Image (cartoon, rainbow, N blue to C red; front, side, top):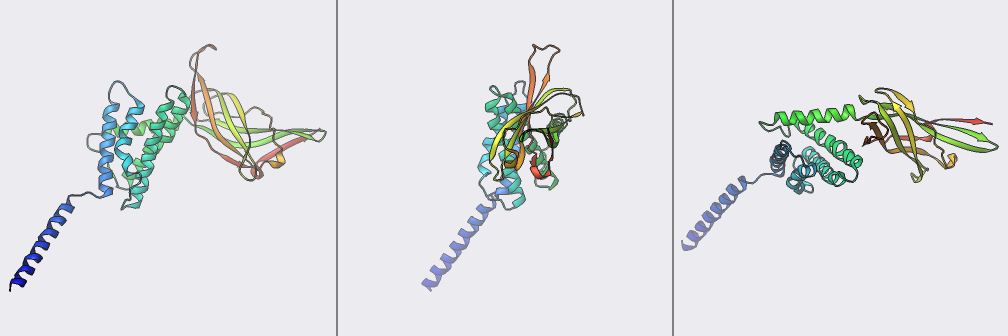
Length: 284
């Protein structure tokens, strides 16, 4: 009887212990729940800071990153949410890194902060909302609308498009001189004084044979045009493709040649296989 009593007491104790553990477990959040809660906290804190008179772009991004970075290597139950979460954190990290260039290289800062980081943040949040994985917190609809408007302005105003490519050239006594050309469109609302493209020349292994700069001046809004001739040093027979690795544009801020230019760098990475490019070589 004593043994049975002891066994009964032990069984009851274990059941009670399991019950306490289960009750304790009910208070723990899953990674998915914890992330969406922290995302709300990170965004609202950032939006609140942005409403202040003095905006520190690096500090704004750092606020979010400090809260969310711990989820970069965690496993989510909802795989789509996990992918979006990590994309969002990467976008915020890009903005944090962009702040290092604010004083030394504004072109680089603008490219990383507003385009690489900002557009990715907006697109990721939009997908979360659409898929009902996260919702804009109450009282912050105006902040979300501002974020949307900023993204739309970046897309509409800061877009220089590479439409096409061709190679022209002249051949004298067996020597060929080639000039790659890019067709550019100004999708902004302003006249662009100058666009300078960086073009990488690639061989069949994808190695860079050389990098050349192509330029076009005075492009009106919605106007297209071809870049000026720039000599290609590489043997055309060794060239397999061309790739735009980046470009800068300049707008004159005042009607004086001595005034500074407002310059912003934009992302462009069209890849052109040589076999798809129209090549025109004149023989002399």
